[in-house]
Length: 339
Image 1: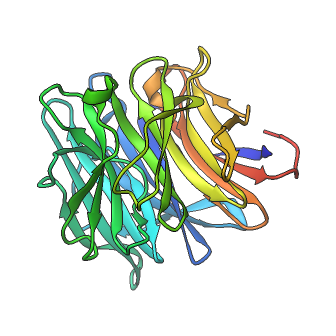
Image 2 (image 1 turned 120 degrees about the horizontal axis):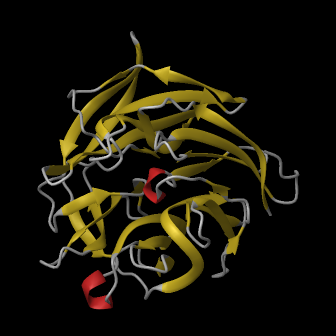
């Protein structure tokens, strides 16, 4: 039911450059992609002195992405995340200033379209460092709850163990103030090491989440909320093995992209399930990569018209200089797999 129609490079490999963490948003038929650009450095995870850049394309020409002029309110370096979200046709950007063993601070920006000069500007940029429990990172797209709140998926520590737990924060005033809505899953209580998760509305107050476990065998756990994210079910084994899941709603179902770890070679994995069905199906269209495990694997996927989807992700080879690829997929019975 999920097939690859075409794969192609979006940002070409450039030895010594580290392209990573692409995310996608669709606003009024226009596609935006945020990603991180850094310099390869064996002593720094994911390279050093990273910065977020943005690109745009149309659904009719997904192989031609153009840089977007991006005027940030602060010239920050050492950024490591680039999570682009759209809520009610407004663009948000979640970033993180991170340097190993030195500092870690999460930010949320609201973006707006500037015509003169043409591009995107930060309307406001807020640090989330004061939130409690203290955030390690935000992951997953910002979404709107049934009760009108903005929901911010994140993870952070609940104890001195150093183990993170998935958290959900909410704001009822457009992101000016945030409060803890739920501890989605308590790693210490469960004896696990949980962090990144993506959540998707299934209608009304019902939500689905897919969550990373940082312990082998890398189970991706699924869980549900029936009360708009205030409480969550017990963990269920999705049958998928991997990291960094992102979810996308499609007609009659849900699609996931994630770092595929079910075999000895890591890859970009895709899976799907029908609405109302707990069973996930591995689509068997993984894009394997070589080199270090953590130099690839994060991606995002958005739905387009005519049962098509577009995915962006990063991969690497043995010289540790990752690049960004894209894939056009078909949902349903159309198309044959091509590369």
